[in-house]
Image 1 (spheres, rainbow, N blue to C red):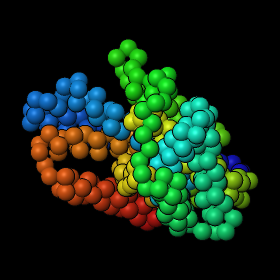
Image 2: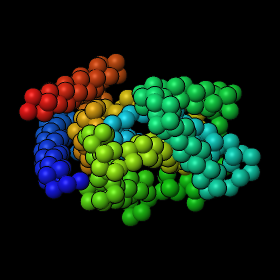
Image 3: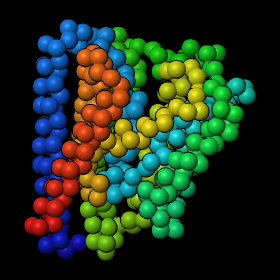
Image 4: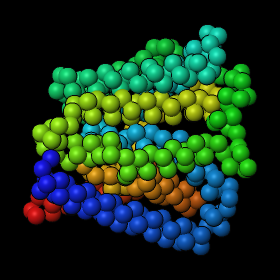
Length: 330
């Protein structure tokens, strides 16, 4: 890049960071306000048991959100993550029941999930399909594999060793291990995405792929490896779910992709790529979790819960669209 292009890139990056910080602060204020209101509406809301339940409800799913955030920043989307999470559970379970130790089985399962990401990435960068179409096809294929491998029957894995179950069910100092793993992953990934020069290529590719290509960035490689990362993160989440529940159900994770995408969009990631943060996406997921918990405590029908969450997503997508329209006009 020459000097003017570099200055423009820095200006855009600075604007993106300021916008992201504003979105995160706004989400945090909304979450706090909702918690204050619910503390008066229900005496059970601010109890440790309920807070712990909310944290556990989105911690493992939050691992998938981290991978989806990076993918959406680069301009992609993955509809197969729910099926991939289930596939990791099924592969881990099948291998364990065949006599493979759970740690090795988990590594093989994550590697298989990464291969699914590689195939999706190959369809996108090699054939020219969109992430939406490629991942939609693999969502169906992988779900079919889960059903075929289990014959549609849940696998009972209660004989998993205690040390393996610990990562899903154990606690350290009263804090569940799942939450600690999630917190470390979020802190590290958010820091790297904000600070690591290598990961700036993700933003450059998502903001303007042609300009990034002309500046020497191998955009095809960036999109490919980010797609692999997203599927691998889904595989990791599936392994932790296996340890947590001690079972592998071939229908698990159905609809998860919608919740994950909703959280990332609510957190400030653009559907057109080029913007988003891990922290914002996690706050988006936290907001959905708080809303769900609030509706349950208020005894709202599960059917209306989906309507309300859908409306929240609609508002977030509308705001994203209006902000992009303003950028184009400028």
